[in-house]
Length: 105
Image 1: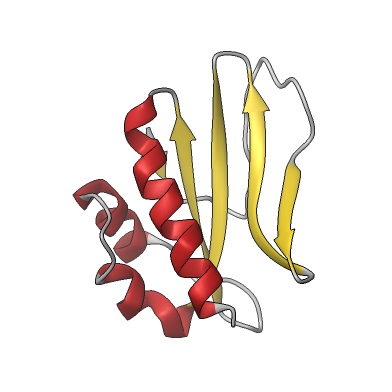
Image 2: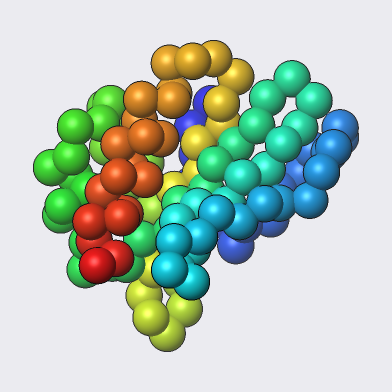
């Protein structure tokens, strides 16, 4: 299941661990949330990078997510949250994280 986050508020009955943040040079690449039977990855992007995201090599589900994502905050960022229950979503996650690394330089 792929969806946009509403202020990153997540309801899960079997929450196993707090969110884990993966960084690169003090910048957050993604947040990882682990649940029983699945996990999700949240990647935040700046609004100015939405066009590059839409041009990236990602699935049509992710493109719809990018279009629908709401912008938050003074810096104008938006989250992409991907629930991972199968290996099919991993390629999109890898592509988004690699793009984030390039955009954060």
